[in-house]
Image (cartoon, rainbow, N blue to C red):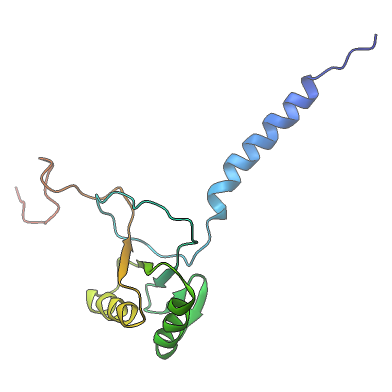
Length: 141
């Protein structure tokens, strides 16, 4: 009999598919932060790789995945802005840090030449005006 049995090949391909489906979410690159939850929609993507600045829970800064000191942020951003066509930058800040720190970093991003700042959040947050229960903590009873 000279027929090819494709059943083992299909089994191998299904196992590989499952492996890649499980491994793909773990391949996201970035500094681990606990993003705040909001109801905002995602921004459209561009051709150029998005530039990301991250503020961790303990206040440290990172451009893409490279950690930098506060004093180095503005010079590096100015140099990067001179080389990029897009003036868009994404700010990932841990939800536990004070708003003042986020505002300081946003000011540095603007001074560095990036005037289109997108705040990165998780999309499962509370929706205002949807008739759902409020998360303000005023309730009792």
